[in-house]
Image 1 (spheres, rainbow, N blue to C red):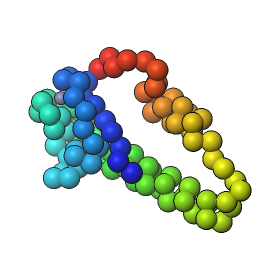
Image 2 (image 1 turned 60 degrees about the horizontal axis):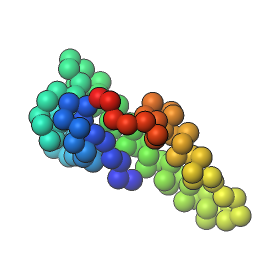
Image 3 (image 1 turned 60 degrees about the vertical axis):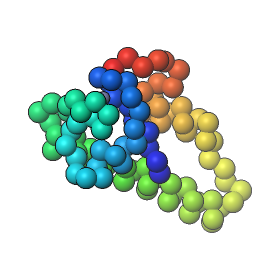
Length: 96
Ligand SMILES: [Zn+2]
């Protein structure tokens, strides 16, 4: 899954994968400022975990669709719940 992210310093968007492609440095791929001051190793692990969780969700949902085609997940509600879960409400603007 292509997870979008954005920098609270410059406001520019990027793919989460861009942070890990060449090894997580903790720097914004756009402005170069530090996104996780003092916590790069922990943030690196968490970024990888978020990406793995997104892939796991995608794989599990596809498998469920294959074996239970009449069971439909509510994508709209899932998106809203996910936004709440990650603390990034869909309706609010960007605020760093
Ligand atoms: Zn930035």
